[in-house]
Structures are given as C-alpha cells and as structure tokens.
Length: 253
Length: 126
Ligand code: SF4
Ligand code: SF4
Image (cartoon, rainbow over all chains, first blue to last red; front, side, top):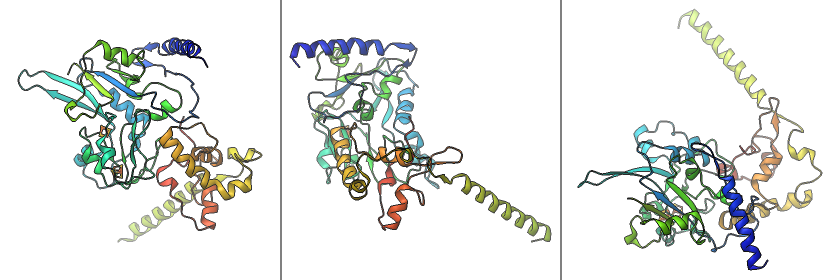
C-alpha cells in the first residue's frame, strides 16, 4: 500500500472512529473501534506506544467511576475476600489496578484528586527486577505480567514506585475469559489489552470517566488525541526524577 | 438430646441429603449440547488434535500474551467455548468437571492439567 493511500485510509478511519465515539448520554460512551475491529493476527510493534494524559483538575472528589469500570472490565469484582481474612487488611491488599489518590498541599491546603494505575514505564523497574522474565514490556509499550511464568516472588511489587501491582493471595472461583487469574501471581493494569488486541481503542476507565479527565491513545502518532492534548497543555510525569519515561502523564497537579 | 430434637435432627439431615441429590442432578451435563457436537471436525483432524492440542495452545499462549495475537486458529478459550456442555437448565458445565471434555481424557491418561487454576472453565461472558 502506498504511503498516500495509507494516509487516506487512516484519515477515513479517524473520522469514522470519531463518529463512533459520540456520547449518547452523559457518561455513556459507545465503544470506539479503530483500524480493524477484528482480533489481531500480526504481532504488536513499536510503531505504537500506548499512553494517557490525565487532567487532575477534571477528576472529581469522591468519584470512583473509573475504579468500578476497571474492576468490572477485568473481573476484579469477582475476587472475594478469602474466608477468615481480616477485612481491613483485605481492603488494603485486595487486587486493584487503578486507585483514587488524594494529594494535599500542606502549604496552601489545595487538594488534588487523581486516578493512579501502572504508568507503563519505558524503563520499568518491575521488569528489571523480575527473576523469571514474567514481568515484561510489550513492543507497543504495555507493561504486563505473563502469569504462565510468574512465580509470585513479588519483587516487582517492591520495585514499582507507584504501588501499581497487586498479588492474588487465594484461589479465585470465577474469572473472565480474557482475564485469567489464579493464586500466587502478580497483576496490574494492562491498558485493557484485550480491547486493544480486538481492535478497540478505548480503555474501560477512559470510557467510564464522566468528566473526560482521561485521554488515551498512541503517543507515537502526532495526530492522536493524546498527543495533541500533550502538545497543548503542560503535563508532568509523576516521579519524573526517576527517569522512567512513563506512558501515563498528568496535568494540573 | 431429647427425643424430639433427635427426630428433628434426623429429619433435617434427610432433607439436606435430598436437597444435595437434587442439586447434583441439576448440574448434570446433557450429551450433545456442546457446540463441538454439531461440528464435523475440530480446528485440525481429530487424531492430530488428540496428539498435539497441548503443543498448539502452549505455543499460542506466548504469541497471545507477548505479541497480542488473538485472532488465530488455536486458543484455549476456543476449546472451552466449543467443548463445554450444558445441563438440563441450559447452564454451561465446566470443561474440567468430572467426566467432562477435558477431565475425561486427562483423568484416564493421569495428566494433571493446570490450565484451569487460572482460566475460565465455561464459555465467555460476552
Ligand atoms: S508503574 Fe510500576 S508496574 Fe507499571 S511499569 Fe512502572 S514500575 Fe512497572
Ligand atoms: S512476582 Fe512474578 S512478575 Fe513479579 S518479579 Fe516475581 S516472578 Fe516477576
């Protein structure tokens, strides 16, 4: 296919994708389909790097829509508290891929809310420390755990500066087809990889955010919504001093 | 224990037994209710599948997890989707339940399979 033709196709897909993303009611978005809405048959490449821009100003105090949507999409709501467990410990240790974080500036008293998940680091410490190669970075920038190889040592949980990873402590009775889950493995946000691999281009949290605080897309495509937003607004990486080049960026924090 | 409470205890146990028998029956898989029962052949001829199915899915798992390939011929989700039978109430029976598609052979061949410690055992939710 010639470059020009490709461009034409991309433009076409972009406009049709925009049409598919029409908001039908506040907070209810149709799934956005991109490129080919069929399951992937070719390996992912580094032509794409998935990333996010989160606007902390838009993130509302007390809202947990993104957390609930993530729990549902990835079957985290099916994980029950192990029998006899301490409920307060469970609250702290239950698997969670995205969390609501509240920051308070002690000088001014200003409060900032933001969702925090795996930042999909370009130089991920979790991958560096993994003794088995289970923690890995996919060519398209998504950092994941291959549960077939994970031995549950939890080194990666200690290495992650963002507390992004969870450990499954007990057998899980019910799991989703696209999110297998078993005792003794670590897991974390994977940018709803099953959606992306099936040709969709939104994550559950982005779709659920009524306040449009999350923009998701391809950081390598200068025309993508996320690249455009990053170009337009000032943004930061959390703990930029660690030089991990995170795929998730924040503005207004 | 008074005489009355003994009788009540016995009655309760018998009722419990009866209920557990009934619920066991409701979960019984019905022959011919799996999608596969209506198909000529699996993704490969049966003798090939019998010998090599584990090679196919083990290779596929790396391609899926590491390279994102989900639109291929071989997949464990495909096995489950096609081979899970339904019970009389139309509810899917897990493929690894006693005597079901996966368990039947693996039990006979004394192969303990670990797939279903993590993977879903009935067809997908969507
Ligand atoms: S945020 Fe944590 S889990 Fe995610 S890539 Fe970075 S170090 Fe790994
Ligand atoms: S818990 Fe699993 S993914 Fe994490 S470092 Fe250990 S083997 Fe690697």
